[in-house]
Amino acid sequence: MATEKAYKILAMQEGISNNSAKSMIDRGLVYVGNKKVVIARGELNADTKFRVIKVERPKIIFENDDIVVVDKPVYINSDEIERQFKPAVLLHRLDRETSGVLMLVKNEEFRQKAIKEFRKDKVYKEYIAWVEGIMSEPIEVDKSISTQKKNNKAYSNVSPKGKPARSEFFPDLISANKTKIKCIIHHGRTHQIRVHLRYIDHSIVGDEQYGGRRAKRVMLHAHKVRLLGMEFTSPEPKEFVHFQ
Image (tube, rainbow, N blue to C red):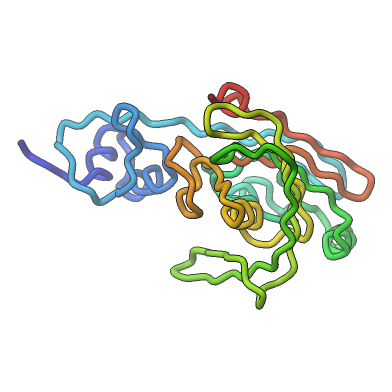
C-alpha cells in the first residue's frame, strides 16, 4: 500500500497548505483514532483518515483602558493571542498547552506599574493541575531554576545557579494514581510549575517534556490572577472536571 508523509495526507484531507498541516500536527491537534500524530514527516498509509481537534477562540474576561484579560485556549501560543489583540502587548506568557488567564496591557505607564508588582512578588497566581502519583499533603518547593534555550525551545531545571523560585502545591482530589492540585507560584520562572513538580516526582499529566505520561494536553490551567487590586478568573476546563 502506498505511503506518504503525514502532513501531506492531512493537507489533502483538510484542503489546507502543507505548512498549516505541519503546524496542526506540531500543536498536538491531529489524531488517528485515539492516537495523537506526533511526527509531521512520519510516513503513513496514503488513505489514513485523521481526526482534527478544533481550537477554541480566546474569550475576553475583562477589559478597560489599561488592560485586556483573555481566557487563553489550549494549543495556542501566547504570541498568537498578542497578534489578535494588537496594539495591546503581553504582560506575561503561558505555554502553548497551558490554558487560562492571560493578561495584555494597552499602555506603557500601566505596563511599568504591573511589572513592578511582578518583581515584588505581589501578583497572586493560582493554577490547577492534574499530576502523576498521589499527593496526600501540601508541599512547598523553594528551589532556584535555570533555563536554557535551544532551537527556539526552552528547557528549565532546578539548579543552585538559577534564579529564585518558590511554588506551593495543595492536593484537591485523588483519582487512581493521579492527583488534582492547586498551585500557587512566586516569582514565575520559565516552566516553574512543571519543573518543580517533576523535582518532587509529581510530573503534570501530559507533560512529556518533564516526565508526564502522554495525554491529550498538558493538564495545567491558569485559574486565577490578582494584580493591582483586580482579580481575574478562568473557569476550570471541562476536561479537568471530568478527568479520571
